[in-house]
Amino acid sequence: MAENKEKLFDQFPPISTEEWKAKVDADLKGVPFEKKLVWRTNEGFNVQPMYRAEDIADLKTTDSLPGEYPYVRGTRTENDWLTRQEIIADNAADANKKALDVLTKGVTSLGFKVKEAGDVATLVAGIDLTKVEINLNCCPKSAAAVAKALVDVVKAAGAEEAFKGSIDFNPFRKALKHGVEFPGDIAKMAVELLDVVKEVKGLRVLAVDSVMFNNAGAYIFQELGYALAWGAEWLAMLTEAGVDVDTVAKRIKFNMGISSNYFMELAKFRAARMLWAQIVEQFKPACKCSCKMMAHAVTSEFNQTVFDAHVNLLRSQTEAMSAALAGVDSITVTPFDKSYKTPDEFSERIARNQQYLLKEESHLDKVVDPAGGSYYVETLTASIAQEAWKLFLDVEEKGGFLANVNNCAIQDAVNASSEKRHSDVARRKEILLGTNQYPNFGEMAADKIENAGGCSCGCSEKEDNGRGLSTKRQSSDFDALRLATEAAANRPKVFMLTIGNLAMRLARSQFSANFFGCAGYEIIDNLGFNTVQEGIDAAVAKEADIVVICSSDDEYATLAPEAYKALDGRAEFVVAGAPACSEELQAQGITNFINVRSNVLETLQAFNAKLLK
Image (cartoon, rainbow, N blue to C red):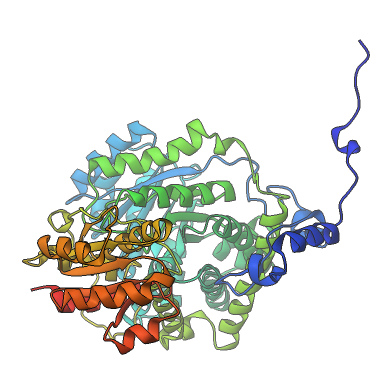
């Protein structure tokens, strides 16, 4: 049989972008293309509904291969990232025992919190330092002592050449968290630290903890822009102190957060490597290899919720997937219950398994930069890089990272973004599934809340000028709202008075149930009533605190006043929707309306103030 060499695409004529656009415009029937299908990102650029080869034709980011400068496609030619677990224990011996246990379960990177340098040897006892990455988090003032203790252990094990790890030396943390300048000579401490670790090449000790911005609610371009400025501060500060750029660059480690904006986060890490390589290149290193970024990724705490907490697993899974596809060096998946307790054995196991799913079942570690060449991702990479670069330049023009941290300009900018995101959640412009949309009405959570924060490194937190990074999770206001309902002596009942047009009453009763369910109220739904009086009688019999009339806009003009009068103040009366007759209804005393333009949080807070006793 003759081989059929006919190519499928040869059967179809090429279609230009203009022809596609004309077809879309025809289907939109007069609705403006830009208004309907183009959306504006929080990062400051527009995203189109479709991309074609011509959109990336002029991008230089597509010219390199994985492992090649400027490393947009990765710093390695393989994608086997390290699976990291943070070890939480009461003392060094218990932490070591736990570490040895999880190392038998697939973990390849460990994170420890160290209070005293003398604990280091105990923490890593029995661990193969040639195969397991060790990461220590300590108070900046004790970093040199901790580093010396770790170096001594590594040398004793003969692992100087093979060892990989980090010490989270972050003297900027105090100013970022509390708005108070670090009381010490940062450059002098860093130079001393570099001297201590000089014999262990794989030990990175200069931290860029931009995960702090992510957890505070920063937008993606802010985290990236400030991370680049942070790294550049280390380069400038220490080269001025006489350290060569290659030494400094190879000791910097980026610890970055991951939000749930899937494609944007994937593009962020690609852009980060490219921009960082170009920054280091300006310092004229002796080796291009010094331009490689080492990036550890941590799934976000900002979007974690207390209620419907298992949805946190969905968020962290997509986040970890973004980082894995982007080619980061290691990943920590934050356990789903961290927002309300110290993670337990079950939640830590699930967090590990989330990464194993990506490796063992999805084989994401077998492909390097699978997003490379994607018209959409390549365009996002370039767009995010552009916005982050603008911010980086702005920080540099205003004195650099340290100056902008010490005067709280960076904290103020991130906190402003956090406030905007809280507002967007309150108005449902940004959705937190299970919190401000589709809540589990009957869930109770007060009994499971255990933790109450505290310092993570043992340093004093007494000084605070009130201008540090926000610590409010995105769901915190909704969590507080539901916990207040849960603690009240009476749980408000919301009765759906469904009447009239079948489609509209069903749609509006579902909307209203989700709306009031966000406060944890008891929802009493109904199939429908033949008369208003029948519905009001049923609501009174159920001892409803709120009666929501659910019907069509046309019918509200007569049904709503009739129901309001029949209820006669025995419960709060609410109209579901924004009918054209709203002004007429308000003139008759009806003041409560809920619709897609409502501020869900403020509305429910007002009802809580009226109803909770």
